Length: 157
Ligand SMILES: [Zn+2]
Image (cartoon, rainbow, N blue to C red; front, side, top):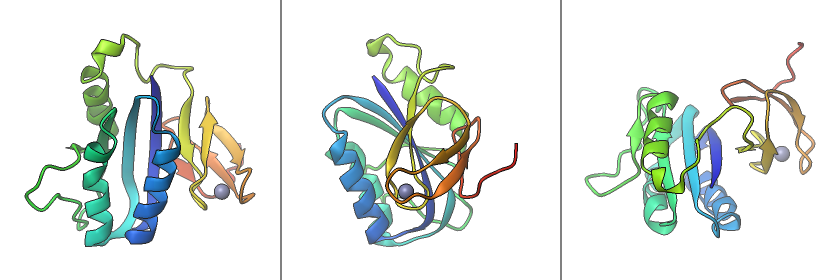
């Protein structure tokens, strides 16, 4: 069972929503746990929020959790069934692990690889540890923290 952490950054509009959809479609065959971290979002449009809330329905073999929605950004499903929302990563991970216990693996364990997105072009990279990474598609460099958050600058270690 693959796990993916996607760091949403910038403005969640129709364009970013569509980019997210097309990336997830590339991975859609196998079941996944998908953690969407929205801490880096500056704004969200209704279209963007609506794409997000339709993900669980569209990818029914995956489990979704959304966490760390910044104050003032409304990602709610407008009264409809939407994506599960959690205040922080820990509660989101607990939800993802508990709701997929039939797969009998140990979840977000140390040393397992996860997929993260390039903060610049959204390309997904498989990573195992924190450190500096270069995107093979757009060439941008970024730093990945232990919590699998991306920072779009290269940090001096
Ligand atoms: Zn890139």
